[in-house]
Length: 248
Image (cartoon, rainbow, N blue to C red):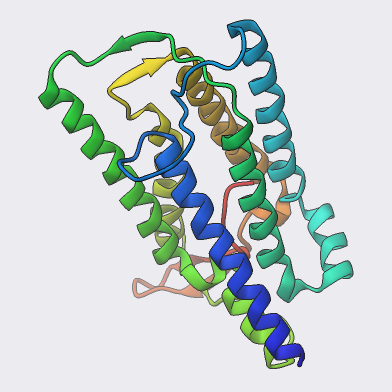
């Protein structure tokens, strides 16, 4: 019975994560159906909307930053086990992401925009390509580990958590940097920049920069370094990818 429950939990967590990606893509202007958008009609004054959106973004950032810290991870693992930690983190993140989009108060006043149809189409293409880069980075980093599926598989078999094999520094940076940079650039790739979008863009840029800084300061988020012989006879660095390898 336990393996079945864990499998259902994995489906719930993975499905929620994919659904949250869809919502964000559509919410930011992707050409897919969604009942609410970043640039919808205003529901409050600009001052109230700015204040409310700031509260939402701070709460969103606090959750991701706090729950990515080593001390909090350690306590979470004691409570639910390491093999369930990533799936649980992703499930809660997905719910909070969708809530951020739903509760956001639009401020659709345009600040600037692209004049030609061709330029607008090119920007839409760039928006889509950034999402492709983002998902490609997740796959290259290890899709199953990122979404907690590998860990749930271990739990279903009753096996303890096993870390991933070490990878080179070049591979680690070559997969993580595109993930981080694409996340920061995706909101900016729009043919029209409104006040509400600019607020979200500034937040995401600051959030990504702060997350990278915190990751470098928190030893638990920095990959462990191991030395191994290289072809030239000199020691080469190998990085063990931390669980999930996602932004804090």
